[in-house]
Structures are given as structure tokens and as C-alpha cells.
Image (cartoon, rainbow, N blue to C red; front, side, top):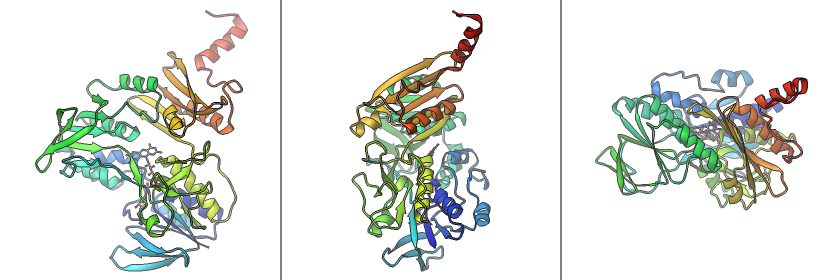
Length: 427
Ligand SMILES: Cc1cc2nc3c(=O)[nH]c(=O)nc-3n(C[C@H](O)[C@H](O)[C@H](O)COP(=O)(O)OP(=O)(O)OC[C@H]3O[C@@H](n4cnc5c(N)ncnc54)[C@H](O)[C@@H]3O)c2cc1C
């Protein structure tokens, strides 16, 4: 069986690996426009500091390990169309020639494209978006001549970039339309995060860029009638699904602009699957389509699509469940499942409950649905946040209520309980 995977991000790589593991006899081939090793996007922040270093050790899937597994990879090629009925793809090779490739099953993992707002000055030089290693290198190469940077957007990647540039000694401004990580963190946690960001990072909360100033290169950005001087502007306001190939193959595109897939990640054409930032997936609670531009979700979906593509009915739990973890400004931040914002976007009525533990410097928000079942949660902690995040994930997956399985006895409380059992009440 010939399986072609288009894309070498986490969705495509996880799909190719899983397919080969589940069906060792399958011929698995990855086609990708990228010319470098598949890399983790978060790790590419290193390229800000070391733009010309070839090996940044940020690859989870090296070429050598692919060869070892028997997976063929064609880098620097672009799939430009094809005919799904006859199982053929048209491929533009590195030298510009066009070739044709036959497949039995196809998995598209073509990712997303960063969004740039339609405002005056957006075409000036030193306006950046960050998606690939090449994008980060582009900024890294001019970094010495940049003193001040404006980051637009305050999700995980915007704040991660802000922190890195701040550590590199730049004057950093963050512009955010509503509040920090609005879709991911409940308001009190978002506020706590704001408090933990160094005062020298200038936060412009509740603002949106109106225009970018400069001649050839950026000199500033206008927000709320005020101009912030800047030598560079980086937009980190999310991605839209890249459906160019899916569209030209005639696959159905949904209302959110992503490739439509069913719960088996199969597109409108049987035998053709799509995963990752390019799709809109059915939400596991409501069945409504959601965009989930998150690497870990792309990898889980890739693995699941591969299983179906090679004819296995193995089901992995909750492919569309969010699990995002990062350490920002000395704080672990973990977001699992729905927040009250993503839930209400889908018409779900939810309640937020808060746990706070000064001893362990931990704040937790738990989100429950109308039947009391846990549908998501968020953790901010000085350390070990991911451990608590996994506890939340496990409870969301098993559909428990907080009464059935209360969450989180903080470590110092557990220790107190043990001591009280021996020595009596401790005040
Ligand atoms: C700075 C940054 C930090 C991030 N941090 C995190 C994080 O901490 N945790 C997390 O989970 N997620 C993170 N993300 C998001 C994560 O990187 C994406 O969700 C993930 O990369 C999506 O994977 P994907 O496989 O869908 O597509 P992508 O990684 O976007 O890959 C798309 C692939 O498709 C190829 N392609 C597209 N069209 C064609 C074509 N026609 N022919 C051939 N090849 C084609 C491209 O070359 C590329 O290889 C971050 C993203 C950024 C930008």
C-alpha cells in the first residue's frame, strides 16, 4: 500500500511514523515544501539568537531516523494538484520540473498561514510573522540592528517571543486587543499572568494596531492614536488554515475555512485524510467544527489518521482535546480542553471554579459543563504545572464530575493530612 503524507510538521511526521509502525509493509512517503529537517516551532525561537547555526537540535524527527524507519522524504517539493479518483498527485520538484506520483491513501497536513492585518504600512520591511525556522532566522539575522520590537498578539507564541527578545536585551512592547491569552486563560489567571510579566515589558492591553509608520522600514506602530517607536513589528495573532492544495483537489472546505473532516479525520473524499492546522475538526463534546492550531493536537490527529489510513480501527482518545503547556516568565502554564471562552463560542454553558494555593504558588481554574462534568482546566504554577495538567486531562477524558473525583489535593495539604492522622489536628 502506498501512503503519501503532504507536510512535515508535527501532523505529517506523526502520521508517517504511526503508519510505518502500524503497517511496516506500507510504502510511506512524505512530501514537503520545507528544505530543512522537520522541526519543532517553539524550539525555533533559538534561531533568534543563533540564526546561522545549522544544527539547533530542535528536530524530533531527524532524516536519519526516518531512513531507519524506512520512510522516504522529498524535501523542497510542492504538491500542486492531482486527481483523487485515479490516486495521482502532481508535484513540482526542486528543479522546477513536474512529476506525477501514485497513491492508495493520502494524508494532508499542510498547516496554517500566519495572519497579517489589512492596515496601512503592513508591507514595509521589518514586519514579521513567525511560523518556520526560516522566519525566525530572518529576524535573528537583523537582530543586532534592532533595539525595540512590537509584538502584536499575546497567545503562547507571542508571549514566548516577547520573553525571548526581552532576555536578549530588546525593548519589547506587546499589543493585545482584549487581554492576555483570552481564549485560553480565565480572566483571573490572565490577570495573574499580567502581574508576573516584568514591568520593563510594555503591555498595551485592549489596543489594536491601526497603522504602521516608516519609509522603507518600520519606524513605529500606531495604536489608540499613539505612536510606539519600533525598529521591527512581529505579528503573532494566529494562523488560518492553508487549504490551497485541498481546494485544488476539490475537497470540501468548511465554514471556518479549514478542510472538512469527519470524526475519523477523513475528508469529503474517502481514503483522503487531513490533520493539523489545515483542518476544522469536530469538537468531541458538541460535534461542532473547531480550529485547533496546536502542535500536540496535530500530532495526535496525525497518528489517528494514519491508523485509519492503513486500515486499523485503533481509536486514540479525544484527538481534538487541547493540551498546551509552556513555561513563560518563570511560570508553568497549562491549558487543557475548553476554557469558558472556547466553550461559549460553541454554545456550551459552563462554570469556572478556582483553586488557589499560595504554598505551592499555584492557581487552577476548572471548567465544568451543565452536567457537572469537567470539560477543561488551566494551571499556573511555579513548577510541576504539567503534572496537574495531566490530572485535569485524565478527568476530562474520563468524563468525571468534581464530586466523583475531586481534583488536586495540594502537596502541603496531603502532607498535613498524613501528619494529622498520626498527631491529631494541626492548626
Ligand atoms: C512560534 C510558534 C510556537 C509554537 N508553539 C507551540 C507549542 O509550544 N505547542 C504546540 O503544541 N504548538 C505550538 N505551535 C503551533 C504548532 O507549531 C502548529 O500547530 C503545528 O506546527 C501544526 O502542525 P501541522 O503539521 O498541521 O502543520 P505545519 O507545522 O504548519 O506544517 C505544514 C507543512 O506542510 C507543508 N506544505 C504545505 N503545503 C504544501 C504543499 N502544497 N506541498 C508540499 N508541502 C506542503 C509545509 O512545507 C510544512 O512542512 C507554535 C507555533 C509557532 C509558530
